View 1 (cartoon, rainbow, N blue to C red):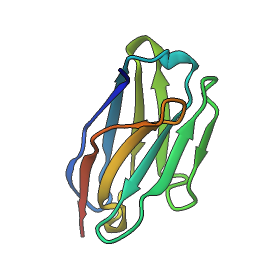
View 2: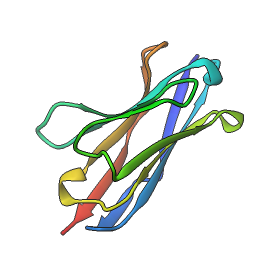
View 3: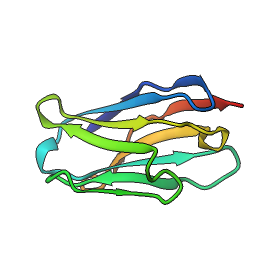
View 4: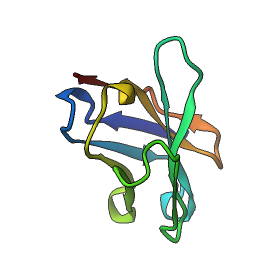
Length: 113
């Protein structure tokens, strides 16, 4: 049974930083590429960032230069470092394992102006 558990969300002022973590179990993490998505109230879930098993990364234009995705295979964990946060980054952030199709439960990020 694949499980993904996110953590690290919270309330932060505009311009601040947060680091999200997503720890997985039940899969061969090191061979999986992983993705972060987010969903703001009243909006569709949108892609944020992805990282391959070889640590190649891809970002949505809206977060490029501010967010960094990384992984620690020894800890079965993928991270999302979010800097220079803006109120429009407010959303529930989810990690996703595309190979298994599983999603985490989400972690709330709220950025105040």
